[in-house]
Image (cartoon, helix red, strand yellow):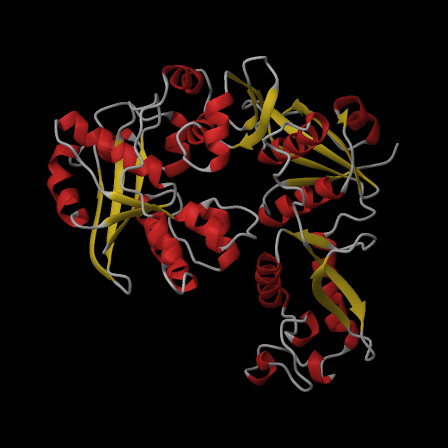
Length: 456
């Protein structure tokens, strides 16, 4: 029996966090047999970044039960269960901390769906809950709320159970007790870091950089490094002496800076990491009937894909979505092998390009629109995103389809000319990684502002 759960907290100092919301689904391996969902009054301040992330504020929690009022129910629903969570070490630590405040021990076996996913689905681009569920086609509602994330974890865990056909991996992954006390110097390191978006640098005793990473919440990410028990985290815990960081505001800027810094500094704990950020690309070709076709293929050395993906699954997921959005043909996008009409044509969801029923120019126009939206080839543009503070914006400059660099500008600064851009940006190297990072980010963040640039 499993107790699949998710917890939202106030944020704050290590082991001083409080629970603001909890969701637990008791799962027998086939279906959910019991559920408990509740807001919790943490009796302490909620960090502003947490309010922005979850939408949970102090006013919402004034009449919510305090932890001692829900503790008995938590004990009952998790009794004789293995606790399952996405990053189980965090959720289990928070629960044990709350029970410790009440003077009661709380011990359960645990399973982490992050670690299980890494073992059973080794080719995923990311193992964060949001990106992993999106790549696997798992619907998520109320992201960053306890019940929404817990239900997504239930669906993910079902998928992991089915993939572990002989059940040996899941059985071997059960931990008797993942809780442990952080070393005092590790606590000091975490306490010194802000909960902001940026790039962080982990240094050893000699000051050498041993690992570079990026995160939307540097404090939380480094805390994970210093509490997890996987091989890489244990190496970091053994060697870390200090952590420095650079604020970026924008996740896209953080991704680009992280990529360049790893290539430039080659930290020893990054060397085996992300040797290749992407494996598959989207390509186009004209068939014998004149229709513009799309296909997903592994990227070869000299190929020029429209856009790139971390794995085949995320590429196909994207294409299925584009078929729906742009009313494309399953057969002409390579998603269905058929010598006649595609399945969608038989249910009137395809206009008949697969059987030469739809005019070539009409169909090709829609495909061209898709290509234009997802490729910045030959374009001159500035990508405007979040800055490091409220009055600032980040700027990523692309000239003739080539990434030139990035910088920051005042919110009211008009950025639409080459001369202005070149005075703002810091030049950076253009390569396949930067192309993949930018295209992938724009594909997933449609609200990012893109400004066409006038050549002066």
